Image 1: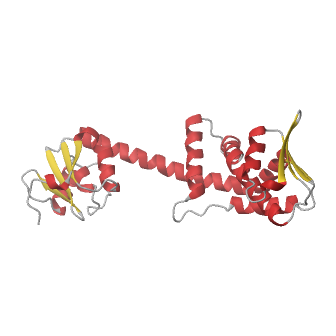
Image 2: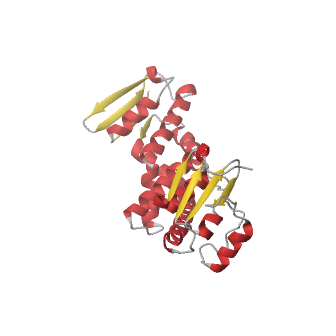
Length: 272
């Protein structure tokens, strides 16, 4: 017989429910001093061994990892603000499934799997709390590195938000004399004056010089968002049938109530 003892009922149930193909061989027992999940009439080998490793990883992912990261944030990186800690943990959760391209995170779950595989060999009883503590100790340095990279992403996110805020401040407070611009999404984004003539790159460069601002000084003129920031109109009308265009969503976020979104069929000027 092989037995895992849990002090926490939720963790015991989560482990038990994670045992799928071999669940008929396992039983759940509740005691005064905790909870047991037992493998009856069989040793921990073959499919049962594989299922147990997978179940342990699932419980650790769902019940332990965020707490471990929070501990690193507080005691290694000295974070104190609860909202900031929560945001970093949210980024960490997002990156578990799909880290950004180019971001190389330590393979913590690979290390955990290898450790658990070795830990379970030749054991008939496992105390889950002891296993968890041993797992944390085994990956602690990698967890510090992992958390550090999540912090770096958080700082980049903060910097980007500050930049967006500065763009928003410009378009709401910089008076360039431009009352209305039309933006057509027709495969590419083209800006038009209210008279119907398209805006040229030279005009955008001129406005960047005439109404200088550090927040737009180094933006490429060819970036589709730059003309709107340079001209900073009192009103921006976007004509597009796309609902998930990132640059258009960014413009709506920057211009807020100064921007409106209409279907392409309402574009008032002749195209081409």
